[in-house]
Amino acid sequence: MKRSDINRLIQEAIEFFDEMNFKLPPFAFWGVDEWDNKNHEYDEIRANKLGWDVTDYGSDDFMSRGLLLFTIRNGNPELKDSKSYAEKIMVVREGQITPCHFHWKKKEDIINRGGGNLLIRLHNSTEDGELADSPVQVHIDGRSYEVPAGTVIRLTPGESITLMTGQYHSFWGEPGFGTVLVGEVSECNDDFADNRFYENVGRFPDIEEDETTLFYLCNEYPKA
Image (cartoon, rainbow, N blue to C red; front, side, top):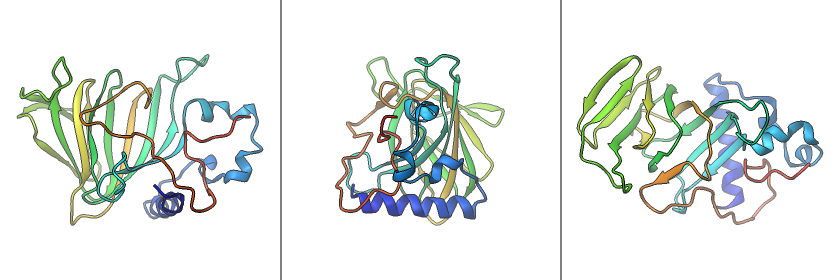
């Protein structure tokens, strides 16, 4: 991805969050110069990979296959008195697919916070990491029921789904209904060890530095 595209996408996300009346924490707006002067008081942000996260999953086509996230809070088992939970806010565009994956450890709630409709395709996983053809147990806002493998669930604004460990899922905004503000509340997030993508994808982008960085991504912070 080009740095200019990442800069633009973050600025568009800030505008979208503002339109949706979703307030980000102050560190969301710290530019590169501010971060270069932050000391060890902010090591939790660095260590837990809080903040901006923009990826095209190695597709070189962000609008078709990509995701923009902001991690608001997260735990880290290596830190004393760390949180045991995480929260993210995401911008999911119409038809923009987050590839099929599951988590080895993390259980999560995916929440449609507003805007358009979110579509989620579900499969169980087999012991060797393939897509199972068994019925999938669905948990939506206090209701539990079974659906056939590969069923696409629609979440309208206000609805949420609980995704269990080992449960394959991919998601995208339903075309014709607008960009979706998507929340995630989960156990601790670890993008380096807890993700199992069905296809081989790149979780963090290779960046072409074609202009000055406006905001560090969560895996770019300088050491204190």
